[in-house]
Image (cartoon, rainbow, N blue to C red; front, top):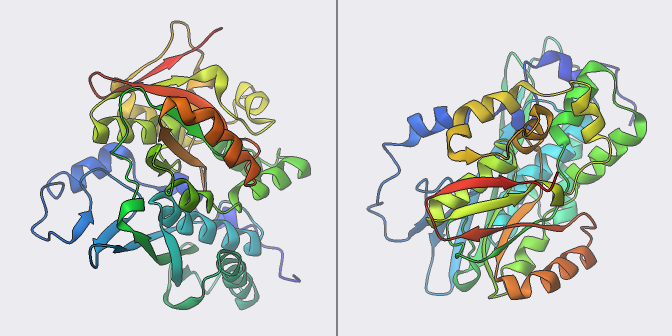
Length: 351
């Protein structure tokens, strides 16, 4: 697509899911609302920080509703649109739902961004929606100081297939469906040190729809799901631990990674959001002795359009991993387990 050469990332103070408010700030803002709802049809609200709201229509069918938007994580406008749309749609898949339509959310500094670039952003988002089999049925746009794009997405779900982040059971195995390191790659891109091969790897991961979540939700052995985005693996694992009332154990040596994430982290390439995440929830996480900062930064690295964190019955975990890999997610790995105990996350490492 022939569009003017403008570095979209240079127009924003942050990018992708790293733009999210820190978990500690959200807790302060929403803490008073996280109470029992007076609406019995609202099956999932703000109580556990889940991925989407869920409204029961009848005994069989639910509506799943979500919105997600952020500032550019890449400079190519079409890729930015694809990533942002894929990320937003993921929330519906993470609940076990099937998306049915989307509305675009657009904020553009019209004095800085030509209309051809805006069209490319919207076209990228529309292509992701087309891949998911849904229309962009409308939306809203405003003139803003920094570029913003995303979607509000509506889906449906059978009530029996609803999967929250708060229903993991002690003894479950934990599976991650995509590799970690998107925040590291986006930081490297801003610094001008990301290679073309790594950029292609990042785009392939961030534009891969999490549609396997709909299939996983049909399996009774799958108890809980959430997508791993701006709070990093540790933050979203902690939400699962708190919502489910148990402890989560992560195997640091078992994590799927983008291939250059570790070398870049060792060179000091890290996002500011990674440290902010740790400051927000580090008191509830136990790390191994002498665990280096770069490994911790990987676990708190904000993931834009990341994978699904799945809690399932341990005896079915290997078969479920094989199914996820066969469905088009070659990086899927078994990465940990849940245990009875106080809500927290413990990281284990063999070396």
